[in-house]
Image 1 (cartoon, rainbow, N blue to C red):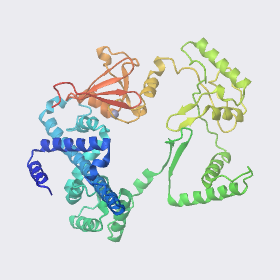
Image 2: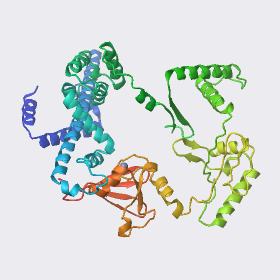
Image 3: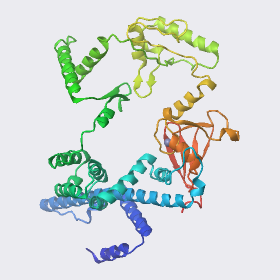
Image 4: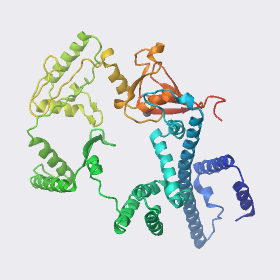
Length: 495
Ligand SMILES: [Zn+2]
């Protein structure tokens, strides 16, 4: 190594912690700024030769240098990730200590006493642009690794292992209490380098090791039962699709698989639509829906709020509302099956049902909408009810409106759904705060407490934008729908 580098490395090693962090920041910025212009600077000075062989040599050198740069960047990123978690753990320790010292200020709610360090993650999480829950687990994971697997923590800090993988391994081993047994497994984990694998590979490897050593976790029937279920979620890429996830006993799954396959094969063999038969995946979906719905004698009902397409939104006036209803009915009658009668409906937690699909649905159950759309129009397996009333009436539906508007908790970066959140008066009701859209927000129970007891200040403007300030002067704007924008800290309050 060049003498200059050795000298600076020695100087850095002797520097104070916060100086090192600043030096790290300066180095990272210098590299990132130059990489933004072109990564060529990473390859050093290589003069291009005139001959073919020399040109080949230059390209080889460039490739090696870029590979080395990528390797170092990856090492630094893994190491930084581990440092962040260790810091989160230390941060929590400091907050706990501080909370102990200022214990009297924390004695607020006797019915639900405050825990020491309860709001530690709430001040660090928005600084990192993360959810409080994630930062709390980061701190927990670092503490666990430090006490149970210090060698693995060292590997992560050196950038040789991913922290996420180390956490997976640590979770897989958390039922082992005896130090000797733990040492036996971790020796093998280290020997086979499971901590350097990806998360799922490491999990498989460790489970296999535990089975061989006779240390496998006892089958937990309660846990298995808790895992079972059926869930629906909107498809990530295509709005009009829904993902369905099913977790069930493997025996049941095998039977279900066999039935779906047989039906799908039958549909595929009988394909008469011309051209190529649909893919196996599509046949399985058709088979599953057939088996679940067509042959079912269960009468299920669902209710959709169907907005009018290309029409003014319903207003508070009942007369206008009835006019809209009548126009809607006329439109549907005059042009059955046309998309113009319906707008797309966003079904929370599922996806989007398009106006065309709704029109088809309405036509297929052979129904005409009567005077009021609030009546059930059952015929067959579904009930489609278009409701235009109530949505815009303020008082009775204020809670639903605020929950709909906010979608998630309004604390910076929190993603807990608004449907299970508290409705908080930004300016408390007893202080004259109105029960109105510009003074109500969704807050999850934890962040409701952080606002009431944890020293977080919030104000809201007429557009429902909230400005949050932490007890240390850091500030954020949050908008409905889970948007957080960091702001400059208040001058003079953050060191
Ligand atoms: Zn929250």
